[in-house]
Amino acid sequence: MTAFIIRSIGQRIVLLFFISIIAHTIVHLAPGEPSKVDPSNPRMKAEDIQRIRDAFHLDDPLHVQYFYWIRDLASGELKSFKDNQPVLEKVWDRFLNSLPLFILATLITWCVAFPVGIRAALHRGSLYDRSSTFISYALISIPGFFLSYMMIIFIVKTFDVPVIGMRTFGLENAGLLMQSMDRIWHLTIPALMTATAGVAVLSRYVRSQMLEVITQDYMRTARAKGLSEDVVIYRHGLRNAMLPFITMFGLMIPGLIGGSVIFETIFAWPGMGRLGYEAILARDFPVILTLNLIAAVLTLIGTLASDILYAVVDPRIKF
Image 1 (cartoon, one colour):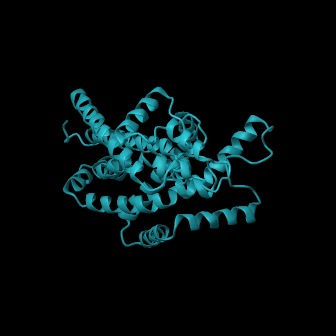
Image 2 (cartoon, one colour; image 1 turned 135 degrees about the vertical axis):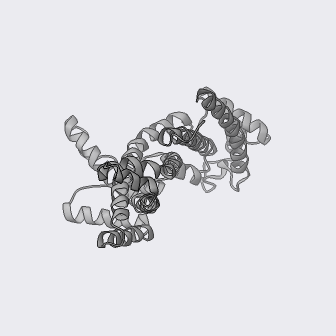
Image 3 (tube, one colour; image 1 turned 30 degrees about the vertical axis):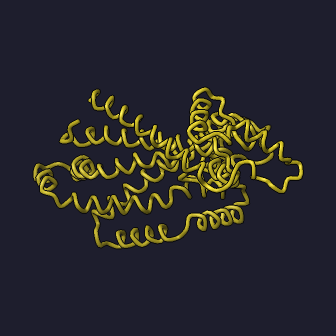
């Protein structure tokens, strides 16, 4: 297993290198330049624009710009085109904001989708199964931003409490308990909206996989041995149905950056997705490239974790 992990990490490092080259090339070949973010600014003179281009090596060949990007990123000296702030500090601050939103949304998705999908499979054709199927397809079909706006209007009109941003204005000097409860409240609604589509999709996958598993011979054998229904379903059935969900879990990790950009924008949540959106609008190449590289790293880590979990869940899989 150790040899497999070391070999996989080495392969992913090589792959990450080629991903960084391709991403850097594509971003710099896209139309638009950072020095033309605000051409209507009367204070922006030609010499100022040239000074910016010289400072960020924008007139150098692409391979030279790539070298400077990697060097500055590794040394922590990479600066944003937009405000000349260190990119890693900006990303880290937004990461700390996105992480609790991502964790809570993921927990809601998995903790709700599995019970719903399993019960729908065990009661196939029942009123519960038809109802959950209808609700799931409805949630998949309705745009998330529409549901979010409807939720904001409902919460504000019904309870007269704020839901936008990370904290309520005017509670800066409140006690620690009050600030913590306010932070949890502002975190809950965006997490629920982020998890809504995930619950709908994942519950359908769980139902489909469990329907395939519960008809297998080993399930009948487990029941014939006198095992309880919970042991049969959750230890034998669910464990054999877990492989597709492990793959899905590994691919969900990059959602920490781009998966919640819509909801972060709607709820004014200063996370990594919103940072990437603002960087694209401002043509802030260092931030865009850094977020792209982080997304690639998270994807590779997620696939490696999935490969390792395969053998943990299914002993028949050997490294």
